[in-house]
Length: 146
Ligand SMILES: [Zn+2]
Ligand SMILES: [Zn+2]
Image (cartoon, rainbow, N blue to C red; front, side, top):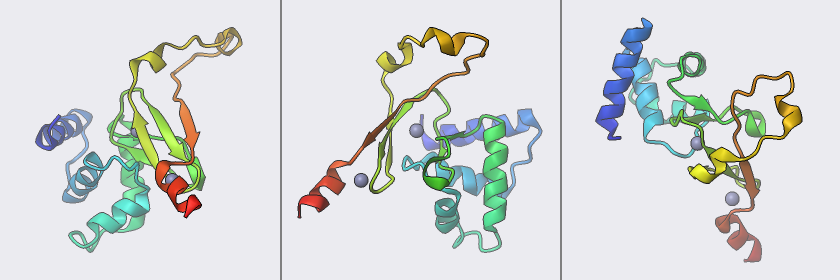
């Protein structure tokens, strides 16, 4: 999907939901759509505050929460004491570096068909699952050996 298509989809989605497409909301969405680092709200703030000097970190938190509630973005659980946002809303998995907190997407259909243990399905409604492969990434390993 191109960035422009993603933006068009976003605008249409907001219209359907009755959310107004303010310049700030658009800026937050745009900052996220090309960012596959799974940024924190603080990272998005740093990216857009030059162009939007009146925006506050609280607005970014609130806007991302609104986006998440409506399925416009997703959350990679609350890892490392901070919420990390994800422009990908389809089910997928992550490689997480325990040293530098880098999160990399893993999109592999074979991981979407694991056998869920029976006891998890008893009495619960399974909404989905996401696998985290915890690693020390190649960059961090290089730093360790130097
Ligand atoms: Zn690392
Ligand atoms: Zn992801």
